[in-house]
Length: 485
Image (cartoon, rainbow, N blue to C red; front, side, top):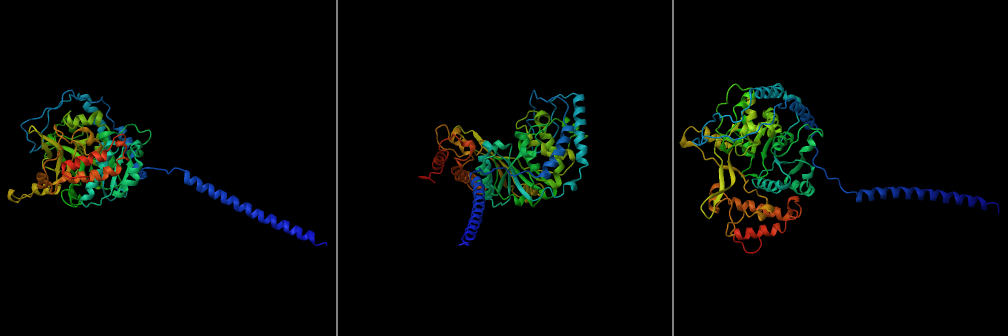
């Protein structure tokens, strides 16, 4: 009768121990549940591809040098656009255009001293200090907003050539970052989005926009060898064949022509420290919708071109074009190579035009045709006219109108005055003869496939009704297809 209290005590201890275990397990379970619950309900973090810290630091150093070399004269304004010699067909070499800016000797001297600060740094630059910062080969495109749809079409056409080159899509700022496009759609095409402002210091002394985006996007991309494409420019052949052959392999920079004669003020070269107007430069101005560049050979050219673009709207765009048609970044890349004495190749074959004749017989251009640099090089070095090879089209720069399906169906560009559907780039037969395919139909095929998949996703098309159905309706009428494609 005296043993019962010991059993009772043992039972109480056991019960307390089991309760302690239960409470501990319950506490751990609740913590685990809370963590899992929070992770489930917390929204995912959507971020652009982060910038390379090495490239970001590299740019910070050169941005300070740019600020030190900033022009100290008032913004240059063009009162009267440059006049060009109407008798010059652009087939020869460049001659000085009459000066139209009227810069004072004091301003010329000031800009010469400012630019010399940068030129001295560039001429002493040791590229071994950035060994490994750039590598590989790829494509760079500037997109965002209304330029996303044509950029997507250009990437799709790049893939149709068989090219597997990775693509860096640069956006000006985070407002242009579209999560579903950048994180879901573009990666399926081996393309990824970068935000240019992420590479800049928050207290950056200058803003970057519009034409200025191109040079810095090329600079900020981690690729060493780059094919740059405007969002509305598409390759017609695999770019790898040009990247692996002359003239790119020996020069590291290939530039294409524009329609118009060059009109830079000769004072530009004086300010850059050249004693004479450069020789053997093609008479036609340049077009920068497509550029081939190797940073191993042309990083200094790219930095100088970036300088000309950072201060382009205020000074250098006017100096390089004097208000002529197409004024902007287009002259800065070749000009930088010329100033530094770096090798380059400018395609001599004149730009072609794809278009149609309206009801009155007037030709309406819709896209620029740029040609194969390798073919052009071979033709230039042919021993006789009998052995001159043909120069094939290589890029179509569809700039008027741009291939933005959401805009095309609204702007009236797709029909004539009678409401009949138009072929914007000419009859099927002429396209097959020129491009080896019905190019317009191929592009429309890609636009409809991607447009119908993304019509509720693209920010630029928000508020637009039935883009896909209206585009398909045009397709069916144009190609006489019954029902939906």
